[in-house]
Amino acid sequence: MSLDGFVVRAIVRELQTLAGARIHKIYQPTEHEIVLHLRGQGASRKLLLSAHPSMPRLHFTEQTWTNPQEPPMFCMLLRKHCEGGIVETVRQIGMERIVEIDVRHRDELGDLSLKRLTLELMGRHSNLMLLDPQSGTIHDSIHHVTPAISSYRTVLPGSAYVAPPEQNKQNPLETTEAEFASLLASADLAPDSEPSSKELSSFLLNAFTGLSPLLSKEIVHRAEGNRTRLWGEFAAIVDRAKLHRYRPASVETDGGKTFFSVFELSHLSGEVREFDSASECLDEYYKDKAERDLVRQRTTDLARLLLNETAKNEKKIDKLKETLKDAEEADRFRKYGELLTAHLHAIAKGDAAAEVVDYYDENQPLVSIALDPQLTPSENAQRYFRKYNKLKNSRAVVAEQIEAAEAEIRYLASVLQGLETATPGDIEEIREELKEQGYIRQRGAGKSARKKKQDRPALLCYESSEGISIFVGKNNTQNDYVTNRLGQPNDTWLHTKDIPGSHVLICASEYGERTLREAAMLAAYYSKARESSGVPVDYTRIRQVRKPNGAKPGFVIYEGQRTLFVTPDEATVKELPSTIKQM
Image (cartoon, rainbow, N blue to C red; front, top):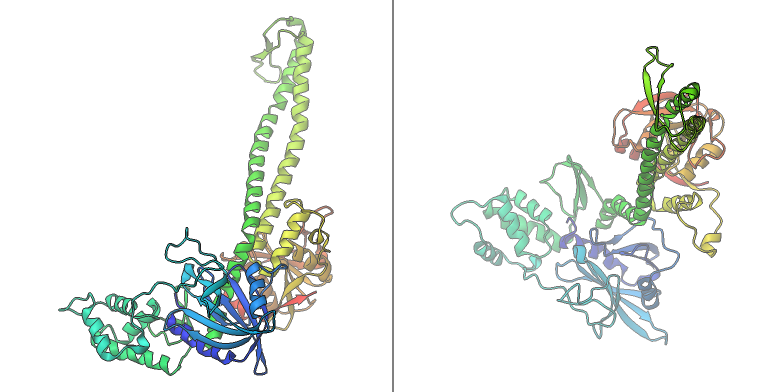
């Protein structure tokens, strides 16, 4: 990962300015993250402590986090022991990805006590613990580790804190040139030939703490793969770290992957973005990744529900089509009834079949019609007429049921598409919509069940290059509000043609071609066709858009439309100024 010991060192350097700051509030927005609101030196800052298994990190953040109504137990414990406390020190353990934050706090008796927050940034083994530094006892942790999970150490309330196992690597900040040469000589490298860049990178990675594969490759690249130049480039990086001379930056490669470091990454080619601080770099890098992960966590059950309901309706349609196919036999039964009526004189009760002339065929062939021997000829004819009427009536009902099931599949697809572009703030609206539509059972009549529905949702609003507001509905609740309440008769409404997506509204009666193109781009981007090219987008005046009575959320019919073809481009969308407006 990009988050190595050198990045942690740069972050800790920034965090050391917190000495003397007071922890004003503590929140736990997710099961892996803690946010500390700190005040000191006339400033207010938010510090993120994340023990996420795939995105562990530590940095100041400007992001907005949605907090649960009921704080988790670990959050409540931190509030008890740390809220109102003063940060005394922030330190890194060697060059490891372990950070300790000491907090001085008054206990229930008013006595000063010292607590320690220990954050271990160890990939899937990452953890955040609250310790008593005097006894080394763990008060609690954000992730519990039982003996069944790890035989090396347990992380449970009341147990003694045991540091992660030693890696037996050299601290690069304390390594001399002679020690480096000795380690290089003892490495498993071919003595008579120049080792490959991969072998040199592996040597650095295995010999020194704090180095990531990314930084190891960078050092080898600067040394041009020459072992005799390796110490010089290694020492240059280490000296900059000792002096805290960092240049945080991210590089988005041509392959679409993004990497970051607190040093220049000259071995990567792509778009480079520099930052004023390591915190700013990490906050920006993890912004979208963390949000997508949070949305995925909170919508897994909804996505599974929608896919299951879609599968049910698809099976229902298959069965209904089989019934409809059977109903196509209706005309044959009517013909049999009429032929039997015309030949009653030639049929006797007890006959198992009747050979009659088919007057409906110009060749007038003989056809055999199966009979019930227990019935009279007339009753057999009536039996076929009843079959005809039953199938004829079912045909209309089945066709309606197929149409309803297809409409429900389209609705479910629109909700699923809303989940794909949802932010954490959108999820509750989608969940409430599914409750109202009967897909999720309303539980009890408590406060949550009685809570009044938000009448005016928060909407995503872009500003076109011509300064015109463009609103985007990101779920059916927002779509209904954009189309049925926000839009004025001469505003322009846009939607992808026959593709689930957002309702987009240009809030102006007059605008230029650029605004129209940008709005169409947004409609395509916030649709199921986000990854496609040449996406058809219909647009018309909103006075020509209406919602039928009894239609499901987000469904409208429209006329007078024209169609644009656009290719969604994420970079173009991100360049447009946007904000969330509470309507």
